[in-house]
Structures are given as C-alpha cells and as structure tokens.
Image 1 (tube, rainbow, N blue to C red):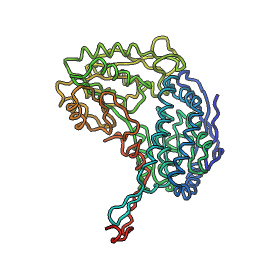
Image 2 (cartoon, rainbow, N blue to C red):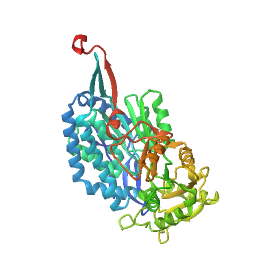
Image 3 (tube, rainbow, N blue to C red):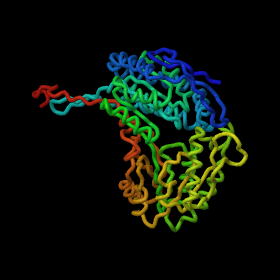
Image 4 (cartoon, rainbow, N blue to C red):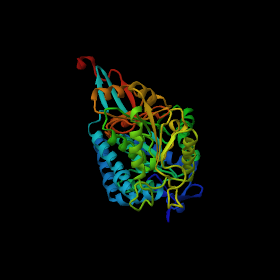
Length: 478
C-alpha cells in the first residue's frame, strides 16, 4: 500500500494545509492500492510563492547550468527506471512490458532530446540594429493526464527547466504514483528549491486554482477537450498563455497501393496499444470500399489475437484506468451496435474469464459511417472503426470531417500521392507509413488544442519574445 501524503514545495516534502486523503484504485483489481493527499487553493498559493521566489535566480542561470541539471535528472531517472515502471503499471494498468518498453523510456527520450535541443537553441538573434531575445515566461502551471503519466510530466517539466522557468505541477489524481517518484528524482538531482513544486488534488480544485492564479504566467494542460475548455476559462481573466493538448479522433487513411495486410494490422495494433488510451490513436481507419471485406478479415484476426489480462502477465493489454472510463467505453460500443455498424470483434462486457478489473474487449467495427457516434466521439479505449471511401478525395474529406485535428496517418507506396494527401489533412501531426519522431512538434488543430510540445517548438511555449530596438549601433550593424 503506497502512502504519498506530502506535497513537494520549495525543495521540501510538506504536509497539506488541510489534511484530506483520497484512495487510489488499482484498475486491474478494483482495490485500493494507495492514498494521496488532496490539495487546496492554499497549497497552490504556497507553491506559487516558492516558484516566484525561485524564478528570480533560476531564470538567470546559464545554458550550461541547465544542461548539467537535465543530465543529473536523467541519471536519477535511470536509477529509478524499474520503480517508475512498476508505479505506472499499478496506477493505470499498463502491462509491465509496455511500461518498461514504452511508457518509461519515452520520458527518458524526451529528457535526452531536450538536452540536445538546449545545446544549440537560439535564445538571441540580431536583425539589423534590433536584438530579439527569448526569455523565460515565468512561473508555469502544469496539469498532466493519467494515460501516459510519466512521459507527459517530462514533456512539460524538461523544456520548462531548459528555458529557465519555474513551475507548479498537478499530476492526475488517477495516476499519482509515478509523479511522486518523479518529484524524488527532481529532489535527488539537486533542482534548486522552488523551481519545481508538486501538489496532488482534484482538477476542479487544484487544477482550477493553478489556471486562475495571478502568480502563474502560463498553463500547460493535457487532457480532455471538456477539461481544457475549463482551464482556458479559468485562465482567461489573467490573459495568460494557455497551451493545450486535448482530444483526438485521428483518421488512418490506407491508400489502395499500400501494403494492405501490414497497414491494417499495424493500425489495429496501434489502437489496441495502451488499451486504446492515447489521444493520437488512429481510431478511424479508412480503406478503399472494394477492400472492406479484406480489411475486416485482417482486423478481426489481429483483434482476436490481442490478449487482455493481468498487467503483470504476458497479456498484450491491461485494463482501462477506472470504472467511469470503462462504463463510457461500454456505452459507446453499444451505440455502435445500435446505430448499425458491423461488429467484427469484441463487443460489450469484460473479456471471458475476467470478472474483476476494468478490462475491455478488443473491439472492431466495420462499415462505419462518419456520422455514427463511434466515428464522432473520442472513445479512449481499444475500439477501431473502419470506414470506406471511393476515392482519395473522399478519404481526405472524411478524414477532415471531425471537430478534432490532433493526428492523422497515411499508408501507401506512392510518395507523391502520400505527400499530396498529407498537405490536405487538417491535423497537427501526420505520420507516413508508421513513421515516428519524438522531437517533432506535437499538438492539434481545432478542438484538439493549441500550442506545440516536443523539440524546439516545445521550448517556444515557455518563452516570451523581447525586441530590443537599437541594441546595436547603426555603424556596427552595417
């Protein structure tokens, strides 16, 4: 039983202002596996005050000092690799192998990438007699999700540190264990007091206090579109910067000349990965109409080969994070059945042999129309919808016919055709033939958010731009 009852504020572990505990549920067993303290606006005030004090000196640190700090953080992270992986498995149900091979390594990769970015990032440039300076924006509020709990923390904290900002983090109360270990990493790495602060608590209380706090200069939020709207509303009165990575309903366009078996198989596996709990999952698979039957056969085989079970077993996927998510997914699967989509695999209820835990059957629907509920709403579970198209223009139209725009995927063998399709898709990141790049800008169009994370584009979110006109005398500039 884990007991994480203190907050990390001003370089120390402190008691909450008003002691109140919350149960943390293991989604594989539905049993209490730990407790955290629930914070309040008073705790946020204390953390912001510490961050503001620390900003005065930390914002003036050199590039080399920040590189060395990130290198120490990476070293401490590596020491705790197994502990973080075990925490991720326990708190949100990721299979142990997936936690060890994907969830935790992603955090390491982001730190390494930010170190390399920081080495050459241009904080200053001259344009004639004007010097343009990129300066740290100030105190940053960070609200992170449960689906990739540790990597999403790193994706915000590391670039903020690299650019000279201080911060207050509220990790998800659904998956707080890995965040606690992350705070231990920061402490062991010698992050100066007040630079990094962490408070647990509920979004409507601690999250709202962070978003609305006059001492916080920007908010970085990852989560649902509904919650993102509330963050933006709370921040609006202070006219502070808000960056958001929100929901998605990403199209996966498989062109007629693609390696069809491989493309369909990879698309289904990608959705099933992490129990479907990835905002950029390619949940709408678009295939040529004449190949629908072939797609059904392939997708059925892959889904039925996806094993579900105890995260500490050799199962492919574990449970979804909690009861409310499980119930939402069941409701949407039933909606797909009710609205006439062809159920190819899976369906409602738990998989056979699993009577406890928030497990979902790997589910595939075919002959889906883009106006069906399962094609419109983000399901956030292991559910694939296969739609058909008559020509490439129709595929693009269907792909763009969504209120989201986080990611899109294309498979094919004609480079020019793929590039033409990519140029027409309204999404923040388009992946061609399964390509990936952790340093590529990540973020969305439309209701999928604003701002970008990762790489040098992620740095810019934590920087203000200052123009010093006349910095260089005219005769020198010539």
